Amino acid sequence: MKSIFAILISLCSLGLFAQSKPTKPAASGDCFKEWYTLFKERGANAVPDGTQDVIITLRSPDYSQCFMGKVDVSGGKLTGRLQVQKMDGSYDEFDKKVSSAYQNSEGVLKEELRDISNGMSASVTLTDGEIIRLFFYKSLADKPKANKKAPPPAALVKN
View 1 (tube, rainbow, N blue to C red):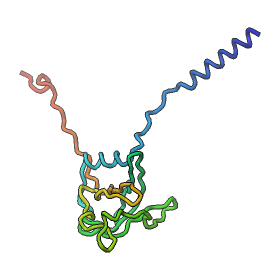
View 2 (view 1 turned 60 degrees about the vertical axis):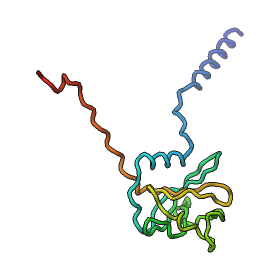
View 3 (view 1 turned 90 degrees about the vertical axis):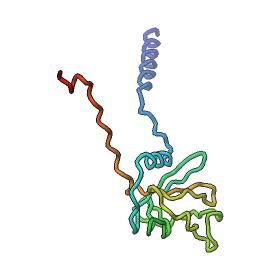
View 4 (view 1 turned 90 degrees about the horizontal axis):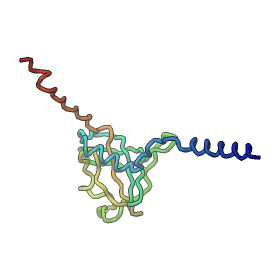
């Protein structure tokens, strides 16, 4: 009986140790913040005319979600309807609508909100309260090169 009890205790303690493996740190889970920080740090080149790939970010105070999409650009402004990529690789028109406060009299996004600045669109609120912003990730500027640190004087000066 004592040996069965000892075996059970040994197995339980092994199980506890087996479950305490170090884990990788969890990702922040805030894709908007990650994209925004990257663009603020590196900047972006001018977005060329034509249909451009974008990251569509949707956020609220509680979460953010990011999707692949595409939109037409002309003269540094959004010109076409936003499309979101589906799991099968196809694209459909984005089905959420911009709040009326951001629309002109024709029900279209106001002209001043169509500008692309630093590789990003303006942030606008949707009718469901979420905030949308587009990131033109292919226009992201190259990562800046770090400055080379100088060695100590003794390594360069011999006399």
